[in-house]
Length: 295
Image (cartoon, rainbow, N blue to C red):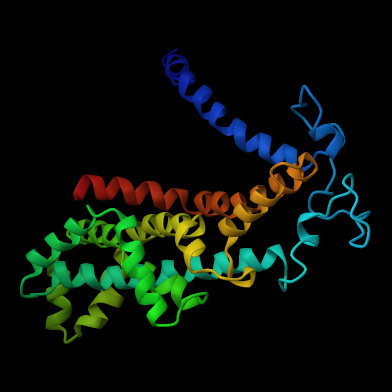
């Protein structure tokens, strides 16, 4: 009886969760609908005749550009090696590189601020926290000028380097690292271990929940990053998925026959974020909980 009452109390949450899944379901189902069914009014909730034409249209001929037969997603971008997969590869490489490097840099900074006798570390930490109050849009122009002067426009360093300094990640890891006893560090120093070895062999294994939690935040943020790549990307070969999706939507938004292709691109864009969250969900919840309790 108590369990049934608990489930009834959670019922509004279940309904709210299902409501938030409706747009995702609509996007996924629209990607597999043929054009006549997609443009039908009223729309169907379940595809009556599922098809993969939005991904690859076998009847499409580039020499005959008929309005009723549109190119599938993987048949577009003939000037880009790899087509749409090139954009996904760009996003994957940039997101993975920024995640790994920014977490290592933030973990080193957190170690110096919590476990080392660093002069002025309290002031440095206050500056780091204060920098979180600055809107990131304010840094767009200075970052662009720096990247342009370094001739990093339209390149991977232009993507990656400005995104490596993340104050929130440093703040989060500092809060978590403070929960690790200082005696572990002192014991390692007595045994003759250097600071870098202590950080890598003693501290980092204990930081796994916090690192996993931050990895999810950073990966999702960089995978969905749109504005900065839009500023520095000058040709399609260096575009990431959000920029490519925006250009695809802008050039086809008024053509209903291309709606399924846009939905297919949106589905492929969202799948990696769902997989990452499901894979790290346990670490994500544990990291947030431990940080909240011990921070």
